[in-house]
Image (cartoon, rainbow, N blue to C red; front, side, top):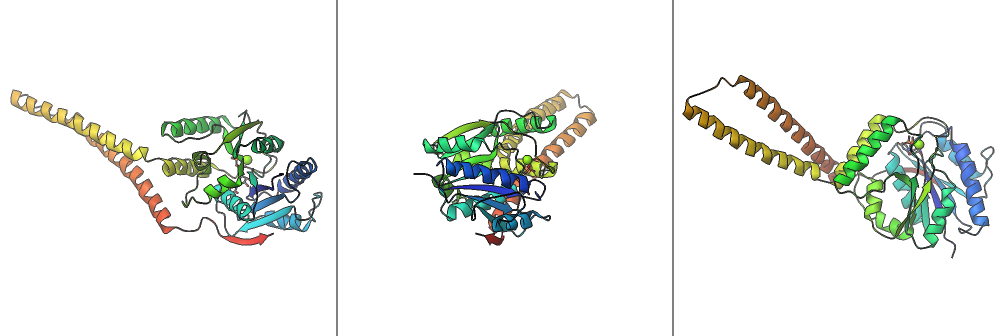
Length: 323
Ligand code: UDP
Ligand code: MG
């Protein structure tokens, strides 16, 4: 049985790359269908994540079959327009859930900027046919990243491993998911989505496909430092309460130290050698004050997130669908 494949692409202000991306994806899908690797009704879903440029107009033109230079069979392209910029993870989730509800057998997600080598798709489908429910695209190079991005990414992965979160190193959101794992994913209700941690936690038979990650084809990264920091925080806090436990541990240690200090102070008093002790006082006030501030910050982070989750707001709002 040839699977019905949906290729899901989140797009945020990608007018510079979309014509090229869609051209290559359409050609790729054509060749997959011609080689009978996927079913003839397979589709490409472009999710517009609240872009402010021509992205949606281009998607609509693709859907109508009249974007210059792109030739695709009718019905290949479909579009989903989100009402506001919901963020990469939410846009991706919106697309995957749409594909799932439309009855796909498997869905492949990839970035719009052609950094994910689309030629790895063939191998992903082969691994899926051999029984892997989830196939991760794993990059075998990091030379397209800046040194800063590389070292922060490494630190982040080790921190996550230390906190006990299973993640697939060097894999981003380029992966194939079968309909069983998509069904499982649809059960996750949290507003803060961290797919790179959630998907490995699903279980299922998995496989990896290695690919070379290229440069962004055109335009600039839609992940500025601020978004990257919040992405990392989301990953940590949505998977682990270890930071809160760490605070308790530090608290216990501080109490033990202070007991020793009290004993020492009492002993000095009895011995009659009372010290002025200004230095130690100032040092401990600052130290303890700092610890308390950190502790409050971490607890606040979790309380804030609980608040956001408790509201149970929708992750994204759909404005328009082009079937
Ligand atoms: N993206 C999105 N919403 C956002 C930010 C990014 O849908 O708020 C999409 C973007 O269009 C691209 C993918 O997520 O398809 C990855 O973004 P980008 O290539 O800018 O990230 P980088 O490769 O620099 O990490
Ligand atoms: Mg990119």
